[in-house]
Image (cartoon, rainbow, N blue to C red; front, side, top):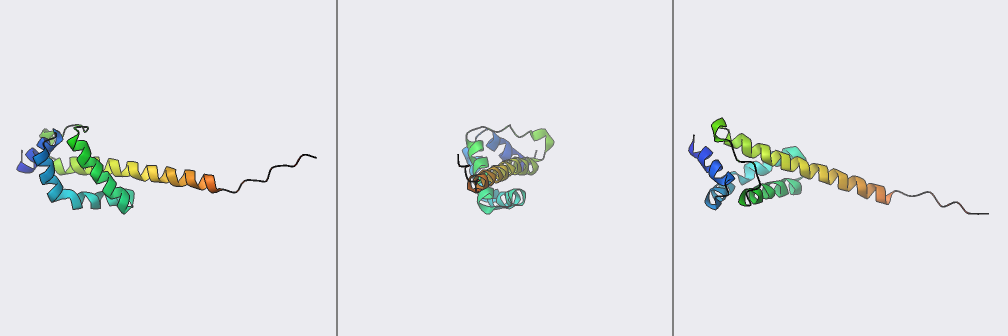
Length: 110
């Protein structure tokens, strides 16, 4: 297991020092990866912030160290969160468009 894998494993158990080290060294890379998935800067940043928060709150499936793919694990989680942001934005835009559609005038009773 590489030192990076050990850091990611510790972070996946909620180790604040490991999470801080990863955030300092990989935040920009993860935002760029999220941006490719959701195509919106704000949503990409939100997805990565959600990733760090989920690590702190121990809400993620633990990184499986036997795979030796810590970077892939982090990018995969961030991509899922970013796609969730993209779907939420799509639904919000769609509902907003439906709310603003002109409606047919009511029929007058004779």
